[in-house]
Image (tube, rainbow, N blue to C red):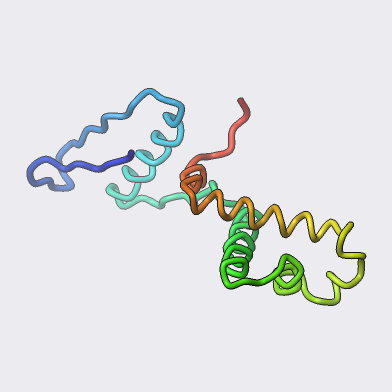
Amino acid sequence: MNRLLLIGTISLDQSLAALIPLDVDLLDRLDAVGHLWRMIQGKRVPPDSRLTAQRRRRLRHMLQAVDGRAAGASYREIAEAIYGAPRVASDPWKTSALRDATIDLVKDGLSLIAGDYRRLLRHRRRS
């Protein structure tokens, strides 16, 4: 769990220290400390590179899909809301790639809700 603990009062002219666990999230934590330092120093903070426009769009679709499913919508109805009815109708539903994509959106959205959202905070890196 990430925490920011300030002991006593601080002013911007005094030095601060960061205690960072040496774990699998080290590089992300260092990046966060760098952003915090830039902000404290009044420097330009670079944009967050963890979520590309494509990932943001997929996240939005995941939430729409889970909301639709929770409201009782069928996968086809969810696909029509996300991709548009004409596009969904262009292929047979049972073999449609949009059907598979919609099912994946619901599955992945439920996974995020169940706690997997934490991976959004990590940069994608090669192993």
